[in-house]
Length: 161
Image 1 (cartoon, helix red, strand yellow):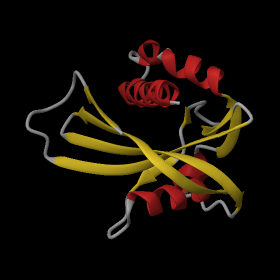
Image 2: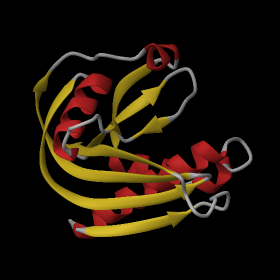
Image 3: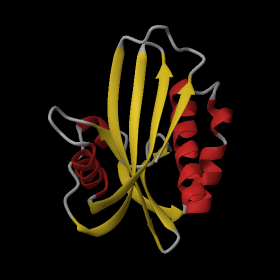
Image 4: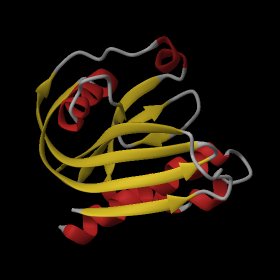
């Protein structure tokens, strides 16, 4: 398993807050599962923040079902991605997962407002989309950073396969 660091231009030193999250790379028949925000147009690898006492694997399973309604089984962790933006250190644990069934989406109010829904797209299309991360710099540093994170993770996924 590899660890990669991304240093945002707006990072503060030292960082004062840490947020840990798990993310799932689920590929089936050449398609990758993504969380699509229909109101904003954003797409992201499904995942989210660890809750108190939760393992990264358990977080991965919970977050994917909540966001997409897909039940997954983490097969292995392939990447830890550490990002520094503003006062935050973000740690994302990326897992290769297999889909094992259908569950129940449980969206937050904010996710409902953003129109979050699952989307399966060709993995090469996702990589191409995320590869344009720098083009979002003027629109939103958050989007640029998120797309850089996803691009970096998917490149690592393809490299280790």
